[in-house]
Image (cartoon, rainbow, N blue to C red; front, side):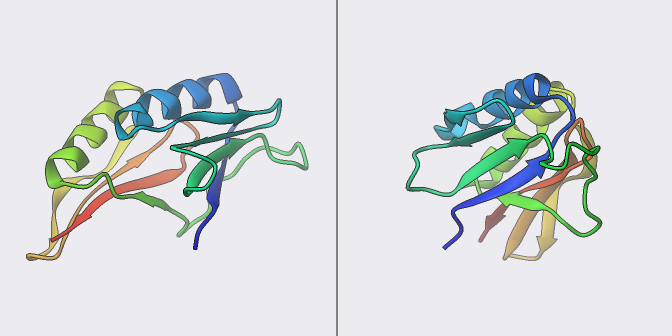
Length: 123
């Protein structure tokens, strides 16, 4: 149902390097790279993450309550993505852990532009 989610960034080169490296282990890569916007995913028919310089050319602002949530397939993969994100320059916004007993495991980061990203696993 979701085609792509877009995050506004201030430095395309820095954001592209961050998300390309972060998501490479999930089989994602840059699929479409234009001057102002880049789409990252497995293929154009699957959900993608887009990063862009805002169209109005004003500074990007992370939304309060907005978050992109990525399901890498296991608790171990959640932990791995969380730690990789921190190594790549993200900040912690919630360490990995069981949020809902026997149902929801998650970790939260903020990218270099302050966008909130969750890594989660159900079960």
